Image 1 (spheres, one colour):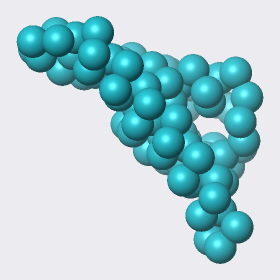
Image 2 (image 1 turned 135 degrees about the horizontal axis):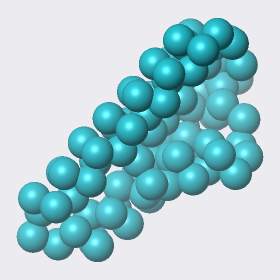
Image 3 (image 1 turned 30 degrees about the vertical axis):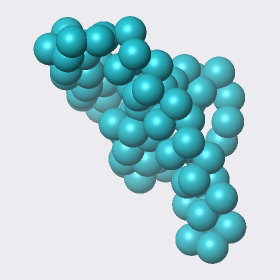
Length: 89
């Protein structure tokens, strides 16, 4: 992978993390929102993998994808799907 593509991927990842943190800060209950977002992300990852039997698009479950989905929620799952399309991991 070229250097510019790595820089782009890391920049987009950091921007998504900041957007999620800002969104959590604006809520009245950030801890509850954080855990709710994590549960939604894990459920979305499971839904993508179940639907992968029909669509052919799935994400492997490992430490990186699990943490990304648990911390970032649904935007994390979408980011992983976009990265899979761009980089073809």
